[in-house]
Image (tube, rainbow, N blue to C red; front, top):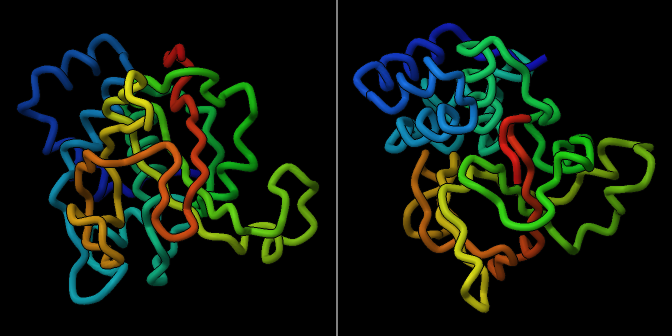
Length: 214
């Protein structure tokens, strides 16, 4: 079950307290906009001490299973922001609950996949195309099906006029330089739908809330 920890809810709430646009989104129950404002408000939150550790990071890791064991937390951040909006607006997101990007890829209903152009607030998930297991096949073993790598973030802007589709995002467990070191929550202005960095070359977009019509 996805449930943001009270301490993290308070952190995000305080960050948005003086944000007039966010308060308007709360008043109008605009889930998609509030999701983006919440994610953007967390830009600059970083790991502490070592990779995948720190107060903010561990709170994100606990949103899904109430455990923080030094696991990658990009999807934990996404799940936490979704849960913040669910709690604040008393609504529910159709996005599957998991810290594993490939499980969310597999288990979120296909009707929630963005068919054309992702709008602001959509969730981007990249996956390792070298993963030998078919994600649309029956789940026989989590270890087998989900052994590939993945990454995720929120779409801020998608430029579909360029030959190489690019987008601006907010992501957890990333950095501004794009190197292998993962530092915290940052905006990325250079993401591609097919990201030829390492083996993460396939991308799919999901509607974060039913109010997101794209």
